[in-house]
Image (cartoon, rainbow, N blue to C red; front, side):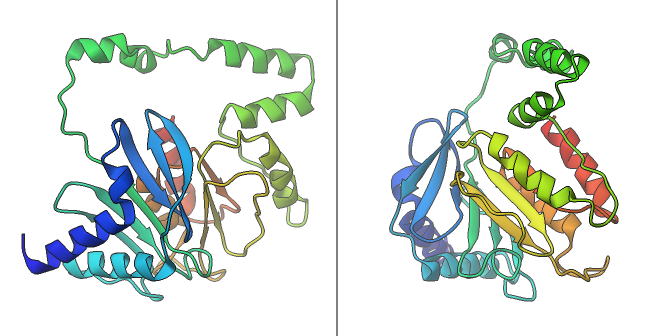
Length: 260
């Protein structure tokens, strides 16, 4: 390990050291200074932590240098893998909120699982469509057939169903979406993708707001599609895409399939 790797490893331990060794941990997310979120055995938990904005920037820049890449306000998205195996997604302004840096760490799994353990965990039930979602689907079907659409929409959001809100300009699509946010369970991790900061969370704590230029073309560095692809490593439970009007539609459909 050379001096640059040692420095990066020191920064990693400075940011995440007390948490990264926890048994069962798979992900760590830093959304803003002073806090981080850990995902252990499938559940997110918030922690107060002495993490500063300066530390976050220093780590992101050191990571970019080690990768022989760059991260700055003209190229604010970085995907990388540490020598120790952790996968990192780093995003800085203007692609996220001012005075924040988004850093998501995915801890590698070096353990070997037996085939039987996959069977016991119900892996093939999901492949064959036999996983235990029947109760929720039956409930939603009942609300729909009884024309109880308010309850149907609340539960569809709560259960994480994919929803596209379609309407003409000025019809209230974004306003309606913001109303539905209250039905998302508060412990989940959320990301938004917008060209203007319209969506706000008042009850959720684990979230990242991502932004692209309003006039973003296909050759722009930060596009809706690229922000959607960044979510593969950010591990959100819900992705709120404020608008779909171009090639990002394909990325949106792919990530829906990825998370299905």
